[in-house]
Length: 171
Image (tube, rainbow, N blue to C red):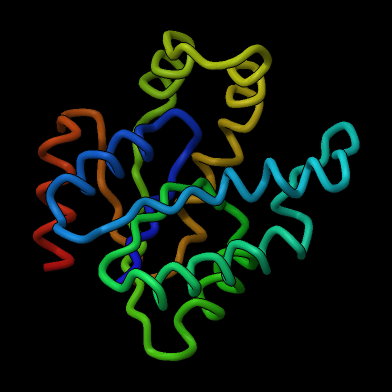
């Protein structure tokens, strides 16, 4: 089982992944952001370029998830903003082609809430501005997510409550 946790930058994907990991025995958290760092190291990004636009990132992410599934088994939790519906479909097809189930969760909130979270978050230099610049694109993406996507509103729920909700869905 693969649980892909999607949503705007700063909405709480990594926090939810950590809480969920604690609830699902034998689960592992797989962060494609690390592959993005590697892809950027191999070939630096041009200004305004997103490593998700590079086919090698999508291929390595798919291959990494499949490899972890083959070697570890169990549930793989993937906290990653992926708002390009075509890229999401591409990766999901690659990782599910031999029978892996994918639960796709999109963490949702309103613009004022996510702005407040991003502005108070302690992130590295430049990340705050980049997250804020991507906000409209990420919030708009909820309408282009696959029909099987589970939308969870994060405004009135704690990470523990959200994790229990997701854990119940994947049990």
